[in-house]
Length: 224
Image 1 (tube, rainbow, N blue to C red):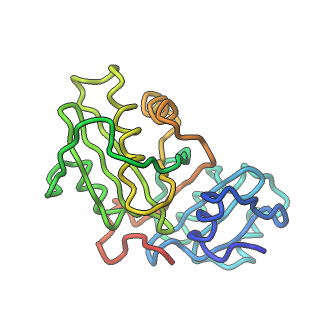
Image 2 (cartoon, rainbow, N blue to C red):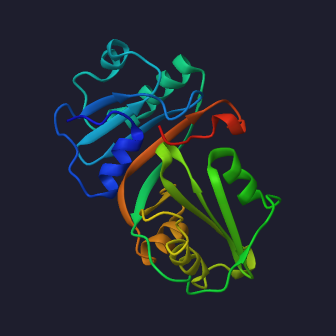
């Protein structure tokens, strides 16, 4: 049975369920009223956008798995929806870990830090912590999934602190669910840190948002 929305898709991935192989391209509702997404998993691609199937097929019928994430289609999606595409990110997933984080963290009350402020524009239920060498954020993002983001202060980089923050995030998921991370492939240091912390690649994702990527709080992606 085909998934009905992105929350369904991500839930199946979290439960390690196999996605349908036919058809390989699925059109789903957008993640929020002013967003769209192209999400790819092995042999299965989702376009989550406010477009009709005829238009989608006019661009992608007879193509392969890579075409929905390619510049020609993504540019067409931008023009049709008047949205701006972000980076092509690798999607990573890690099981939740029980117990306290293995490093000392202090909860942040406000959102003055740029990394935390950015998280509030894209996620709900945002929680953030700081360590002497960086910042860790966990929040509910696209399709209601729990997502982690980290930032290591420049003076402390290349010392394993990114791996420590990514590993600590697995202990801070509010629900008994796995934790997701989205990383641009070119950000090799962050990618290595999350892989070393036990996250595994499961797919890729392009998010489209209004120009400037400034989403008001009422349009932050929540479970559908």
